[in-house]
Image 1 (tube, rainbow, N blue to C red):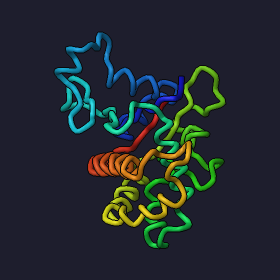
Image 2 (image 1 turned 60 degrees about the horizontal axis):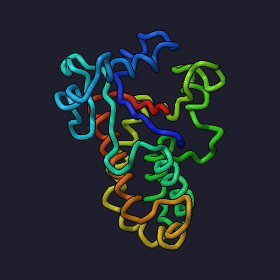
Image 3 (image 1 turned 90 degrees about the vertical axis):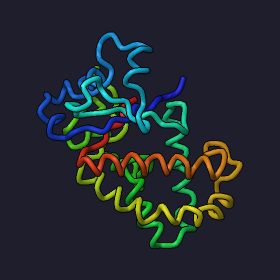
Image 4 (image 1 turned 180 degrees about the vertical axis):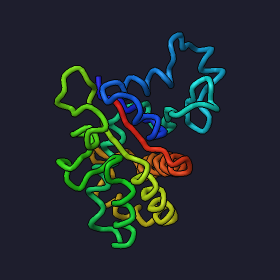
Length: 207
């Protein structure tokens, strides 16, 4: 069994008001309240990929369900590895914008700098604390807004990644199966960051 990714966007002020040790559980409990079942999903199901709590007007977080993956983290890790492979072949202006967009989401220039390893600067318990899940990504609102802007810069240049992808990734194990798979996942991340930035919310990825 592999690692999954459960992605939330959240109002950082409300999440900050919850004790650090309780924040992970609060995200899960709010989006998936006790008694959740198929009827709940039919009534409050995914809207544009987002699963909202029953009282949407008062909701301070939502969970995103990726359309292009089965929920597994592997697809995101493979896309990040693909970007690491092709980025030296990409025009500098596109490369810089894509770096800004992807860093901390599915790619890190230096994995040791991954904010999730330390709980996002203390926002969540560090991965070394037993009893707490390893947070896969922590992206506060100020970082999300920059990623949404970067996405606007790169979205129209995705086709320029086709040849580098064919040269470095196509047919290789541990990389997205096709260029279309790769860019479809990038577009979903673009939608996620755009929506979170519109609300001035942050992103949290849990296993």
